[in-house]
Image 1 (cartoon, rainbow, N blue to C red):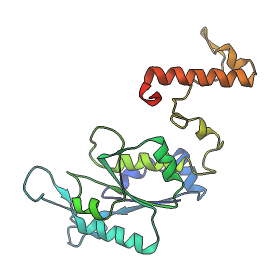
Image 2: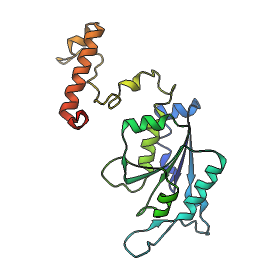
Image 3: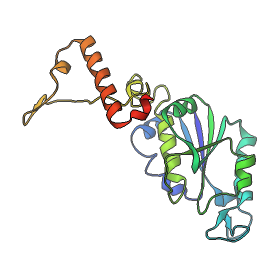
Image 4: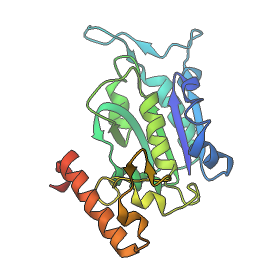
Amino acid sequence: MRIDILTIFPEMFTGPFSHSIVKRALEKRLAEIHLHNIRDYATDKHRRVDDYPFGGGAGMVMMIEPIERCIEKLTSERSYDEVIFMTPDGDLLDQPLVNKLSVHKNLIILCGHYKGIDERIREHLITVELSIGNYVLSGGELPAALLADAIVRLIPGVLGDETSALSDSYQDGLLSPPVYTRPSDYKGWKVPDVLLSGHDKKIDEWRHEQALNRTRQRRPDLLD
Protein backbone atom coordinates (compact mmCIF):
# COMPACT_ATOMS: atom_id res chain seq x y z
CA MET A 1 0.00 0.00 0.00
CA ARG A 2 1.07 3.56 -0.72
CA ILE A 3 -0.14 6.54 1.34
CA ASP A 4 0.64 10.09 0.21
CA ILE A 5 0.14 12.78 2.86
CA LEU A 6 -0.23 16.42 1.84
CA THR A 7 0.72 18.85 4.61
CA ILE A 8 2.39 22.18 5.36
CA PHE A 9 4.19 20.61 8.34
CA PRO A 10 5.84 17.37 7.11
CA GLU A 11 8.24 17.40 10.07
CA MET A 12 5.34 16.57 12.37
CA PHE A 13 5.28 13.02 11.02
CA THR A 14 8.87 12.14 11.90
CA GLY A 15 8.01 10.75 15.33
CA PRO A 16 4.83 8.78 14.55
CA PHE A 17 6.33 6.98 11.56
CA SER A 18 9.79 6.33 13.03
CA HIS A 19 8.82 3.82 15.70
CA SER A 20 7.02 0.59 16.42
CA ILE A 21 4.63 -1.11 13.98
CA VAL A 22 4.54 1.58 11.27
CA LYS A 23 8.34 1.75 11.18
CA ARG A 24 8.59 -2.04 10.75
CA ALA A 25 5.98 -1.97 7.99
CA LEU A 26 7.97 0.65 6.11
CA GLU A 27 11.24 -1.22 6.60
CA LYS A 28 9.65 -4.42 5.29
CA ARG A 29 8.27 -2.45 2.33
CA LEU A 30 4.79 -3.66 3.15
CA ALA A 31 3.71 -0.01 3.10
CA GLU A 32 4.98 3.28 1.69
CA ILE A 33 4.24 6.66 3.24
CA HIS A 34 5.27 9.73 1.25
CA LEU A 35 5.09 13.26 2.64
CA HIS A 36 4.46 16.22 0.35
CA ASN A 37 4.94 19.79 1.47
CA ILE A 38 2.07 21.81 -0.01
CA ARG A 39 4.27 24.92 0.09
CA ASP A 40 6.41 23.37 -2.65
CA TYR A 41 3.45 23.86 -4.98
CA ALA A 42 2.88 27.52 -4.19
CA THR A 43 3.41 29.97 -7.04
CA ASP A 44 4.93 32.97 -5.25
CA LYS A 45 8.41 33.46 -3.80
CA HIS A 46 7.09 33.37 -0.24
CA ARG A 47 5.53 29.91 -0.81
CA ARG A 48 2.21 31.20 0.46
CA VAL A 49 -0.59 28.67 0.83
CA ASP A 50 -3.27 30.71 2.64
CA ASP A 51 -5.27 33.88 2.13
CA TYR A 52 -8.07 35.90 3.72
CA PRO A 53 -11.60 34.49 3.43
CA PHE A 54 -14.04 36.09 1.00
CA GLY A 55 -16.77 37.85 2.92
CA GLY A 56 -14.47 38.68 5.82
CA GLY A 57 -14.20 37.00 9.18
CA ALA A 58 -11.48 35.66 11.42
CA GLY A 59 -8.77 33.24 10.34
CA MET A 60 -7.10 32.30 7.08
CA VAL A 61 -8.12 29.79 4.41
CA MET A 62 -5.89 27.35 2.55
CA MET A 63 -5.80 28.23 -1.15
CA ILE A 64 -6.92 26.05 -4.03
CA GLU A 65 -3.92 26.23 -6.35
CA PRO A 66 -1.10 24.67 -4.26
CA ILE A 67 -3.32 21.78 -3.16
CA GLU A 68 -4.72 21.19 -6.65
CA ARG A 69 -1.22 21.24 -8.16
CA CYS A 70 0.01 18.63 -5.70
CA ILE A 71 -2.97 16.32 -6.17
CA GLU A 72 -2.79 16.74 -9.96
CA LYS A 73 0.88 15.73 -9.98
CA LEU A 74 0.24 12.63 -7.88
CA THR A 75 -2.82 11.50 -9.83
CA SER A 76 -0.93 11.93 -13.10
CA GLU A 77 1.61 9.36 -11.87
CA ARG A 78 -0.77 6.69 -10.55
CA SER A 79 -4.40 5.94 -9.82
CA TYR A 80 -5.69 6.59 -6.30
CA ASP A 81 -8.55 4.76 -4.65
CA GLU A 82 -9.49 7.68 -2.38
CA VAL A 83 -8.48 11.29 -1.74
CA ILE A 84 -9.16 11.77 1.97
CA PHE A 85 -9.56 15.07 3.80
CA MET A 86 -9.20 15.08 7.59
CA THR A 87 -11.76 17.55 8.96
CA PRO A 88 -13.82 17.93 12.16
CA ASP A 89 -17.07 17.90 10.16
CA GLY A 90 -16.28 14.69 8.24
CA ASP A 91 -17.69 11.21 8.80
CA LEU A 92 -16.58 9.78 12.13
CA LEU A 93 -13.72 7.33 11.64
CA ASP A 94 -14.46 3.83 12.93
CA GLN A 95 -12.97 0.36 12.62
CA PRO A 96 -15.17 -0.88 9.75
CA LEU A 97 -14.09 2.13 7.70
CA VAL A 98 -10.43 1.54 8.56
CA ASN A 99 -10.86 -2.09 7.48
CA LYS A 100 -12.28 -0.93 4.15
CA LEU A 101 -9.46 1.55 3.53
CA SER A 102 -6.78 -1.02 4.43
CA VAL A 103 -7.50 -3.13 1.33
CA HIS A 104 -6.91 -0.23 -1.07
CA LYS A 105 -3.68 0.19 -3.00
CA ASN A 106 -3.12 3.97 -3.11
CA LEU A 107 -4.49 6.68 -0.82
CA ILE A 108 -4.02 10.44 -0.55
CA ILE A 109 -4.59 12.14 2.81
CA LEU A 110 -4.91 15.93 2.87
CA CYS A 111 -4.19 17.76 6.12
CA GLY A 112 -6.08 21.01 6.55
CA HIS A 113 -4.90 23.95 8.64
CA TYR A 114 -5.87 27.47 9.65
CA LYS A 115 -9.64 28.02 9.27
CA GLY A 116 -9.89 25.23 6.72
CA ILE A 117 -9.49 24.71 2.98
CA ASP A 118 -11.29 26.42 0.12
CA GLU A 119 -14.63 24.65 -0.25
CA ARG A 120 -14.04 24.06 -3.96
CA ILE A 121 -11.28 21.60 -3.10
CA ARG A 122 -13.81 19.57 -1.15
CA GLU A 123 -16.37 19.80 -3.93
CA HIS A 124 -14.10 18.75 -6.80
CA LEU A 125 -11.05 16.87 -5.49
CA ILE A 126 -11.93 15.10 -2.23
CA THR A 127 -13.66 11.70 -2.25
CA VAL A 128 -13.80 10.97 1.50
CA GLU A 129 -13.99 13.35 4.48
CA LEU A 130 -13.09 11.93 7.89
CA SER A 131 -13.16 13.15 11.49
CA ILE A 132 -11.50 11.48 14.48
CA GLY A 133 -13.91 13.03 16.98
CA ASN A 134 -16.15 15.90 17.94
CA TYR A 135 -13.38 18.36 18.68
CA VAL A 136 -11.01 20.66 16.79
CA LEU A 137 -7.21 20.39 16.56
CA SER A 138 -4.71 22.89 15.18
CA GLY A 139 -4.44 20.95 11.93
CA GLY A 140 -4.99 17.65 10.20
CA GLU A 141 -1.49 16.25 10.76
CA LEU A 142 -2.23 14.31 13.96
CA PRO A 143 -5.48 12.85 12.56
CA ALA A 144 -3.64 11.87 9.37
CA ALA A 145 -0.94 10.10 11.38
CA LEU A 146 -3.62 8.33 13.39
CA LEU A 147 -5.43 7.20 10.24
CA ALA A 148 -2.23 5.97 8.61
CA ASP A 149 -1.31 3.98 11.73
CA ALA A 150 -4.77 2.39 11.94
CA ILE A 151 -4.60 1.37 8.27
CA VAL A 152 -1.00 0.15 8.11
CA ARG A 153 -1.31 -2.22 11.07
CA LEU A 154 -4.01 -4.16 9.20
CA ILE A 155 -1.86 -4.86 6.14
CA PRO A 156 -1.04 -8.60 5.97
CA GLY A 157 2.43 -9.30 7.34
CA VAL A 158 2.73 -6.12 9.40
CA LEU A 159 1.74 -7.62 12.75
CA GLY A 160 3.77 -10.51 14.11
CA ASP A 161 0.56 -12.48 14.66
CA GLU A 162 -1.96 -11.61 11.95
CA THR A 163 -4.82 -12.93 14.10
CA SER A 164 -4.06 -10.27 16.72
CA ALA A 165 -5.95 -7.53 14.88
CA LEU A 166 -9.03 -9.75 14.69
CA SER A 167 -9.42 -9.60 18.48
CA ASP A 168 -9.05 -5.83 18.73
CA SER A 169 -11.83 -3.67 20.06
CA TYR A 170 -14.55 -2.90 17.48
CA GLN A 171 -13.56 -5.64 15.04
CA ASP A 172 -16.59 -7.71 16.05
CA GLY A 173 -18.66 -4.79 17.27
CA LEU A 174 -17.52 -5.23 20.88
CA LEU A 175 -14.82 -3.84 23.12
CA SER A 176 -11.94 -6.18 23.87
CA PRO A 177 -12.06 -8.23 27.10
CA PRO A 178 -9.52 -7.72 29.93
CA VAL A 179 -6.05 -9.19 29.37
CA TYR A 180 -3.46 -10.40 31.88
CA THR A 181 0.13 -11.65 31.93
CA ARG A 182 2.66 -12.95 34.47
CA PRO A 183 2.87 -13.03 37.40
CA SER A 184 -0.49 -14.68 38.06
CA ASP A 185 -0.52 -13.31 41.63
CA TYR A 186 0.86 -9.84 42.34
CA LYS A 187 0.38 -8.48 45.85
CA GLY A 188 -2.75 -10.59 46.10
CA TRP A 189 -4.12 -9.27 42.83
CA LYS A 190 -4.91 -12.51 41.02
CA VAL A 191 -5.58 -13.49 37.43
CA PRO A 192 -9.02 -15.10 36.91
CA ASP A 193 -8.74 -18.85 37.40
CA VAL A 194 -10.34 -19.65 34.05
CA LEU A 195 -7.39 -18.11 32.18
CA LEU A 196 -5.03 -20.51 33.95
CA SER A 197 -7.21 -23.57 33.34
CA GLY A 198 -5.95 -24.45 29.86
CA HIS A 199 -9.56 -25.08 28.82
CA ASP A 200 -9.82 -23.26 25.48
CA LYS A 201 -13.59 -23.40 25.18
CA LYS A 202 -14.18 -22.03 28.66
CA ILE A 203 -11.57 -19.32 28.09
CA ASP A 204 -13.27 -18.27 24.83
CA GLU A 205 -16.66 -18.19 26.56
CA TRP A 206 -15.22 -16.11 29.44
CA ARG A 207 -13.62 -13.63 27.03
CA HIS A 208 -16.82 -13.23 25.04
CA GLU A 209 -18.84 -12.67 28.21
CA GLN A 210 -16.31 -10.11 29.47
CA ALA A 211 -16.35 -8.33 26.10
CA LEU A 212 -20.13 -8.13 26.23
CA ASN A 213 -20.11 -6.84 29.81
CA ARG A 214 -17.45 -4.24 29.10
CA THR A 215 -19.26 -3.04 25.99
CA ARG A 216 -22.57 -2.89 27.84
CA GLN A 217 -21.01 -0.80 30.60
CA ARG A 218 -18.78 1.52 28.57
CA ARG A 219 -20.22 1.67 25.05
CA PRO A 220 -23.85 0.51 25.11
CA ASP A 221 -24.36 2.37 21.81
CA LEU A 222 -22.36 -0.37 20.06
CA LEU A 223 -24.91 -2.96 21.13
CA ASP A 224 -27.77 -0.92 19.69
